[in-house]
Amino acid sequence: MTTVDLRPLDASEAGHSGVTLAVDIGGTKIAGALVDATGRLLVSARRPTPRGTGGDEVMAAVEEVLTELSGAPEWASVRRCGIGSAGPVDASRGEVSPVNIAAWRGFPVLERTRAALARLGAPVPAVLVGDGVAMTAAEHWLGAARGHRNALCMVVSTGVGGGLVLDGRLHPGPTGNAGHIGHISVELDGEPCPCGSRGCVEIIASGTSIARHAGFADAAATAEAARAGDPKALAAFDRAGKALAAGIAATATLVEIDLCVIGGGVAAAGDLLFAPLRRHLETYAALSFVRHLEITPAALGTDAGLVGAAAAAGQLLDV
Image 1 (cartoon, rainbow, N blue to C red):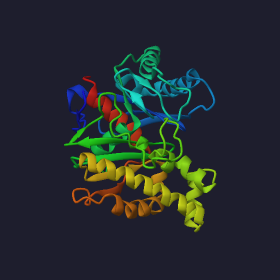
Image 2: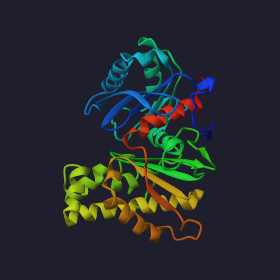
Image 3: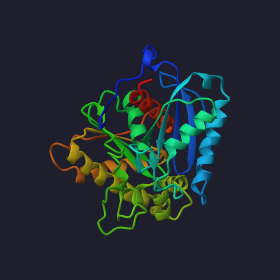
Image 4: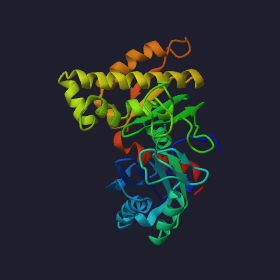
C-alpha cells in the first residue's frame, strides 16, 4: 500500500472505538501516549533517548515508557498501537535505522514493541511509520494542512524529516520513506552526512547543525544569540533557511505541492528561521507552478508525532 485515506478518525465509528497507544521515537526523546478518537492525549510519558549504548538499551527506554502508560486506567481500552520513529524506516519489515540513533541499524522495533505489549497485557495490532509521515498525518488530520490536497509536512529538530499528502491522501511510499526531505542533497560537494551522502538538508538545517555552525551549545542558545544580533547565529539560521528553501522548492517542482508545513524544535525560533527561508524560496521556487507555494508553521507543536502515530494506526489497522 502506497497511499492512505486521511479521513479523520471518528469516535462513532465502530472500527475505531477505544484508545490508541502512540509511540514517538526520536534522537533526543522517546515519548508515548494514550490517544482517544478525537486526537486528545489522555495520558503521556517520556524518557531521554540513551546515547552511547547498544540497541537493547534504547529499546529498554521504549519499554519503560510503555510500562508507565500501562499503569493508567485507560490502558484497558487500548485497541491498537502506532509507532512513529526517526528514519529511515522500513515499514514493510518493521525495522528502523535512524540516522540520529546510531545503536539502531535494521532494528526490529515493531516486533520488539509487539512483544512488550503482550507482556504488559495488551497484545494489540501495531504499525510502524516514519516520524515525518506521522507528523504529516497529524497536521492533515487536525492541524495546519487540514483541507489541503497536496502538501509537504516537515519536522526540523535533531534531524530533518518529512511526509507527503498527494491528491488528498497520505503517501508514505512502499517502505514508508516518501517525503524524507532531510536527505535531499542541496550542496553537491557539501559536508558529509551520516547517511552517507553529502550536503543533505539535515546536515545544514537540523538544530544540531545550526548550533554547531554558529558555535553554540544547542539550537535554543543559538536562537537566543540570534535575537540579540549575534552575526554567527544569524548566519547559521540564514544558511539553514537557504538549505530548507532549496529542498522544499525541489520537492514542489517534482510533485506540485502548494503548502509546506514546518514543525519541530527549530521551527519554534519563528521568524529567525521562516524569514530567511521565505526569502530564499523566492529564488529557488522560480517556475510558475511553484511560485504560489505557501510556508506555514505547524499547528500541533510537540504532540504532533504522538497524534500522528495514533492517526496512522487508526488508518492503517482495521481494528
